[in-house]
Image 1 (spheres, rainbow, N blue to C red):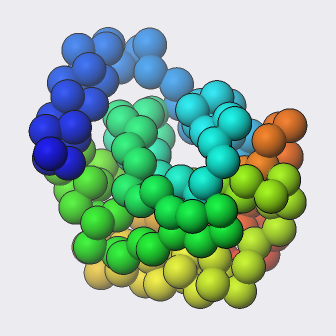
Image 2: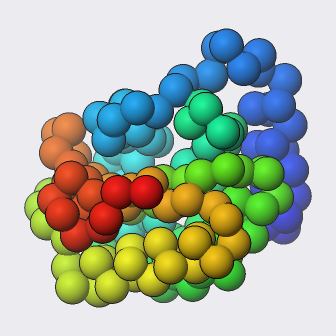
Length: 149
């Protein structure tokens, strides 16, 4: 079932000309793409924004849907999606339904682990974003929790 969803998402983006796909230069650019997709969610959703070599959006996929204050994520699911989309880089994003985008220690640990895995695979993890409703977000890279790629 999950693989079928990935194929549908991949086909949809593939038929969009590259010049019409949003290019991600800043964390705010990424938030503009995914915030509408996560707005109003009452449980945590963790997703992957797959990017091409010019950091244009290839796809958005939800990897995990959790509970009110947690979700389980493993690097294999994150990078399976990136590999299936032939992503050169990715940005991981999750929401905090509480309304407070402050990252937890687990958020920081997972983001660093994903960065390490990405380095092994040659897929850059550009940022990890935590979103809350109302346009609030925190970029772990901008906050100094992830080194720049």
